[in-house]
Length: 417
Image (cartoon, rainbow, N blue to C red; front, side):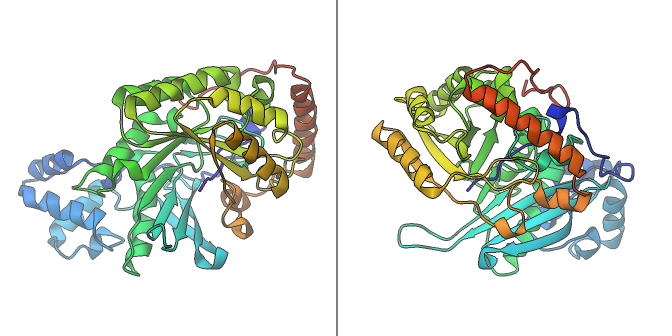
């Protein structure tokens, strides 16, 4: 249940024209308010505290799509709210269905015209498990990390999302589910962007999702993925939440991970795993490690053995996911027999391992593919230059040569601090 996160454009210094076409709406999103802030706003406008509760109920539990539809509030109050806040900060531009309706990929248009994506995945009840509905959300418009097997970077790195822009992706999905009497059961921060480079707003979103007065989702039903922002992992460890931490690892050997996850040049794989190990010790929660499996690149016996040694004895689980084909890379996903052999070697070494398969490939399941389609593909000459550079860098990495390229810079300088 994974959506890869990032791409090449910032790494290559290649950046398409921004998709934003207008200034951002200055009104904050109503879903970004805490209950105390909602009560304070009501008081400042001469309204009783129960009006704040009515507002939050409409935002988080109702099926309304605008203030005008909230009939529990007087018209004058609806007008005040409309003037002060946006009811929805992430409008849905398109929803595509795949896998016989089990996967819904949505692209959301923000007030400044930027596009972000969410993916709603349905898992029917089975003998050993209940029905689940899991949403993958974006935390940034674009990404600055630069992993060369995902489409998000074709959009460039635009900006961090506001807390309301993150949770409004959840509200959209919940409204769709509620129409059929269903409820969202899991939220994963594995969409566009690096969550720990927008950590303050991601933490605000998690607080809203966990709050019984708002969405009321259990912490253990929330997963936050990172490509290895060590200060952010340590900050999460200090907070000791019960959320699941997922590490987009992709390689256990530094030379190769320098190419696959350019943040490795700043925080090498041993440091990332050490920080994750501290998180597991502080929370008692098993850490998930994600590997996008790329044919003849990171799927060898040597890669499996290096990973087994790196994680030996840890409270950890490995997910192996064959790579989605992305136009700008020369790579393909590892064949299933190769992935199975890799998994068998890990299991033999005592590392819990699951093989997972991508959902919604016919609608562009890899993160950023649908938004990139709306924004327009890079020119063929740009794609060719990317491919040539990837080939040269991966060949050097497979010879054990460490990259001399600088690590990507955080979009807003946050780095999870």
